[in-house]
Image (cartoon, rainbow, N blue to C red; front, top):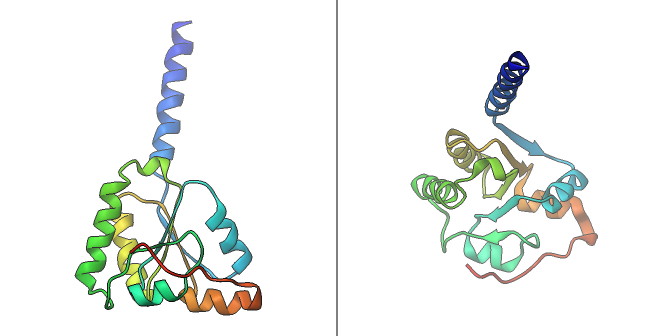
Length: 148
C-alpha cells in the first residue's frame, strides 16, 4: 500500500513537470475559419492595438481596442505586454491571447515579451486586421467605435 502511494506521488509529480514544460508557441494563422474558432473559444484574450482611430473605424467584434492616438513605440508595446502580464497573472488559466497590431515585427515583439513571462498560446492573423477583413470578404461586418 505504501509503495502504491509513493508511485502515485511520483506519477503526479511527473505529470505536473510535463505540463510545466509545455513550450510556448507563437502561431500565425492564415485561415479565417480556423481564426474564427480561436476567437470564439473560451479563456481567450482579444486585443487590437492598432491606433484608436483605426480600431474605432473598424475592428473584429469582441476585440478590445487598446491603441493610442498614434502608432506605439517599441517601449510602449512592451509596456502593453507587461500590463497584460500583470492583469492576467494566472497564466495557467489562460488558454490563448490573440492580438492585432500594425506590423508583424510589433506583434512578435509583444508576443516574445509575453512568452518570456510564461504565456504559452499566442496567435495572430497573417496580414493583421486588413488581411482578415479581406479574406472574410462581404460576409464580414466589422464592429465600430471603441471604449479606448
